[in-house]
Structure formats: structure tokens, C-alpha cells
Length: 170
Length: 170
DNA sequence: ACAATTTAAGTTATACTATAACAAAACATA
DNA sequence: TATGTTTTGTTATAGTATAACTTAAATTGT
Image (tube, rainbow over all chains, first blue to last red):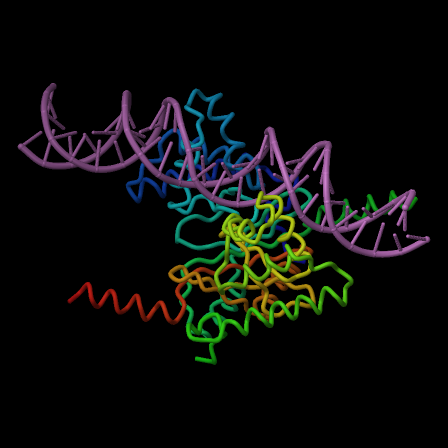
């Protein structure tokens, strides 16, 4: 097994993840002459609270706490902007959003989502992309957008599951 | 380019698709001692009206016309049953449902969805599956459920798009 | 600096998707 | 036919997302 991505390392320094994500976002938006307004930056920071996808409505209370309007359009607009800039991805199967760990060139992720702890990894999976592209090309289908979301158990939770099954058996 | 699946052949005999889908469903449910009730069969038939994913609420009027209760739980229950039997798939990125052309062994499809005409093909794509499984295995992630939904342009609509662009240019 | 224009945020209302919870009916089986 | 189980009817509500219009802030040209 190869080195785990941070999402699957419970003990990693997550402050660093947040800090880096915000830094990259500021740099990219600046380069692109896009306005990373306070609301947008806050929403991005909130999304990066964890490596778990968050629903739009889960962000509203924190927006209110920060003194902003906290009606749904506010958070959806911020999320729309962040998605357009490739800073967050939407997970269609969960109606939720997650920060992109390598924003920059436009891309669509391939996500591994743990059904137990919700931790989610975004793979940059060339083989998956290639397989999809080949299948599509074979039918003359032109791809514009890909949604690849895989739900299962992360290594940590397989552990826990095994433990609890064992406990049940005792 | 290989032979197109029926979904991408506008002129195909679709009555045959419907008939076959219903026949397979009856056979499978019978084998499994599951009850394909009138409501469930009607919902399946409605889903098979076309090769385009349909929203749950789009089915309600037809249920009402047929004299059934047409509150949301009715159609969602039928869809739940049909999904459990592998007779329909849910397309998460569209909140919509589509008939499975090869029901039987449990599986998760890989879908090519035309953003112009909505026609959708379910691929039985071993290479895509394999690529996903390899990537997951590499991280020690155990897969339970896969969502692969690819949006783009089908061969027919590329044609149309090209034509309309050409017309615009004239 | 000012006015004009564009972009973002506030606000209210509402559309769309899905499920909870309980009652009534239909079915399966003894 | 009595019994338990499954399905359907029914009402209400939860959860997700956007439309439409107003106000405010930032940007641009002069």
C-alpha cells in the first residue's frame, strides 16, 4: 500500500491544509483577477474545516456567526464562484461540497468517499480518466464533464469495522 | 466507431425496448419471488418511455392518469423497489432515474449522458471499473458503491451542434 | 473626485427533491 | 377465516437549490 493521502491520515496537521488551501486560492484569484471576497474566503475556509464533504446548509450558521447574511443564496453564490474557480468540487451523490487539494488547471476529480467517517480523497487518476475517455471515444461521445464518486470504507474504518465485529462476536 | 447502442439511435424500434424491459422485469421478479405490482410495473414502463433519465415528479401525473395515488411516496417507493431489483438506476448528478438495459446480476453502471438530447447510454465498462478498483486498492480503500456519470454530446447532437454553428456563421 | 457601469450581497419567496409517520387496504399463509 | 406481513394511501415536513428583485460595494472612464 502506498503512502496515504492526508485525508486518510487522522493525525495530520490539518491547520496546514487549511492554510495552504487559502493561500492557493488567494494566489489563483489574484492571478485571474477574480475577487475572493470575505464571504467567498470564509466559505472556502469553512469547507476546509475537514476532509469531509459539507452540505450548503451546514455552512449557514457559521456565516451568521461571522455577521453575514445567512440566507441560502449567499452560500450558494459563494459555492458557485468557488466551483467556477476550481477551488471546490460538488459531490453529486451527497449533495455536498469539498475543497480541492490541487486547484489550478480545470479538472474533475475522482473521489473516494468513506461511508463511515466521510473522509474523502480526490484522486488524480489518469487511468480512470483514460478508461472513460476510451469508452466514450469508442461511441463517438464527446466528454464535457465527469462525475466519479466511489463510496466505501477507508483503511482506518475497515480497522474499526473489523474491531466492532470482533467485539460483537465476543 | 463501433455499432451504436440503441440509446444513440434515434430511429430504433423503441416499443421493443419497452417490451423487453418489462419482460425481463417480470421474469426476474418471478424468479426472485418479488412482487412486481401494477404500480411498480407502471413506473418501470414510464421510466422506459425513452432513453432519457426522468425525475420522480415527472412520473406522478401519469400515475394519477392511471387512477393511482400520485403523492411522492408512491413513486419513490416504486423506484426504491425497482432499484433494489436492479431494474432502474438513479443518476445522482441529475436527480433522475433510468431503466437498466441488462438487469440481472447486481452492478453499477457507467453512464454517458448527452447534455443536448439527454439520451443516456449505460456502459458495461470493465476497463473503467478496473481502473477505479486499482486506484482504490492502491490506497487500501474498499469499494462498496460507484457513481460514474459522464456528461457530454452524443454523436447525433455533435452533428446538430456543428450544423447550428454553421448556420450561425452564414 | 465624480458619475456611470458592473459586480456582489441582501432579502423574500418559492421550486424541486425526498422522506417520516401513521392509517387503511391487499395479500399470503395457516 | 383469522393472522401476520407487505403494499399502498395520506398528510405533513425535511432538505436542497434557485428566481427575482433590491441595495450596496467595487471598478472604470472621464
